[in-house]
Image (tube, rainbow, N blue to C red; front, top):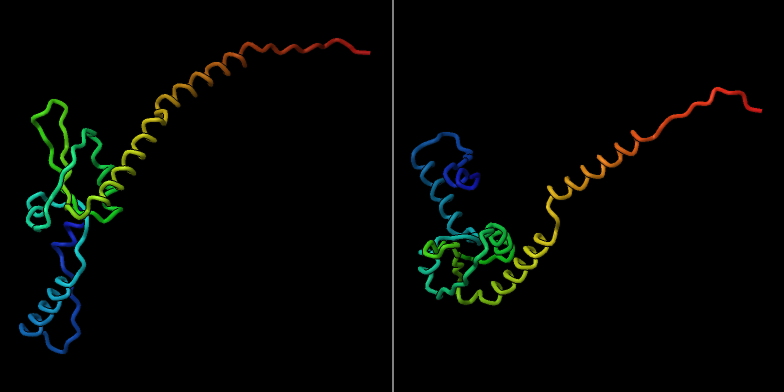
Length: 157
């Protein structure tokens, strides 16, 4: 969201004695020239743009619906990729398209993605932990209530 806003809004500071149309035009040209030389960002791009780059695109099927976690890993490896949802299958499958030259990097990114997902699945859920703690607290309360306080007011020798 913020990236969209920064792309639409431009803050331009100019030091000049008199602001004329030609000065503003020169400043805008300098800004646009600077933007052209800016390094391209990596990450999720549309399929049409990926295929249009002319480097050949390969794809991998992903059945996991948690595709957002893959996007994080792919951005970490600076890979251009495109995700397309295949709606013809009953459990929807996702096709991840990437450049042909990035095959090794994508393989490494998928290894890390699978490792992270396995760790998440092995962890017990927070709800299960809370239920276990509630049971322990309930048992402790019952045990405390069952204690009896005996005060002996008799004399001791």
